Image (tube, rainbow over all chains, first blue to last red; front, side):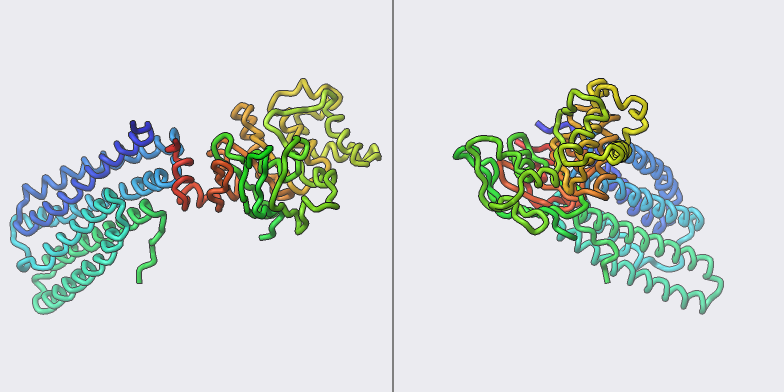
Length: 218
Length: 251
């Protein structure tokens, strides 16, 4: 039979996985709304961010209660610490998805400046990074989490590529500046989501083996 | 860091049964080492080897060695009385003498050859101050020590131990019979005392080990399973048995 501590850790874990599902959905739907100019869908993304905010507070409270009442050690302690931080990353990911949705609303039904090529790829990478980080936590597979961290470079490279491309658009035709800046903002939001997904993978590695890999990438 | 005490392949037998086997570990000067492990794992036996307290138990013997400041404490010409002056001990149950508070400390000083009245008074005051007891007892030094609370009695025993200026202090569950406030005072005291002394503490309370010690050693069935910095032991122990013990998944 699981101990009370194991039960409480499991409950907190269930919530943080639920939060990951919501964050992934927020990314997917925000980019979809932007691609399709779907203001209704964008509104839904913004509304659903409240749930992420609520879960953030709930998980914080649960983790603090576990720390105070159970005084966990070793892997149990690392799990609580990892959840406390991952929690913040997921909440921030939700905020960036909302920012993308707001850009959809700003366009007010207009199509983006150009057909989206790199943006959906970036979004897909972000989603896979989050999924794989959480799979790494489930399976206690540090190698999987390490591969997530490497993938962040691809998102960074795509962001630079989008930026360069849009600079040339703006130079050629200043009338595109407003829309181009919007698109740069979307790309930057996805790049930041990639950074938060990297953080989650780093916390997963810490939880699994106690290794701190922050700031060690080249 | 300077090794104050070193155990080298220490095995200790009660009759034919080894209570601890092949223990090797360093204790660094001016640090606190916590010994943790389930009941009967040998941590108290190990502690009592360090000032040869086990010598008084018949049919016991030790193999291997304990080195104090570079010298074997089992050496044929080693001064055991001197050892117990250099390595003081505080027990689980406070055991003040049925004498006045002053005499509890002065007695040890006198049998250690200190005769000067002024010197004795000064040492009594200093050791009571160093155990944060002075303000509580300065006006009643001639009252019986048995009138003090449990926590005060335990601090008096620590004052008595440090009055003769040992180098190492052994503590066998010094706070296990105390209320939380007295426990906190003892823990604060341990942190202060390590500036001057090297401390080895046996505790069943893992949070206490985490709070007071610099290094933690985990014993199980007479063997040393793991020793490391306390923060490492409590965040990422290397041995799965240590992990299971400190996370309460034992047995």
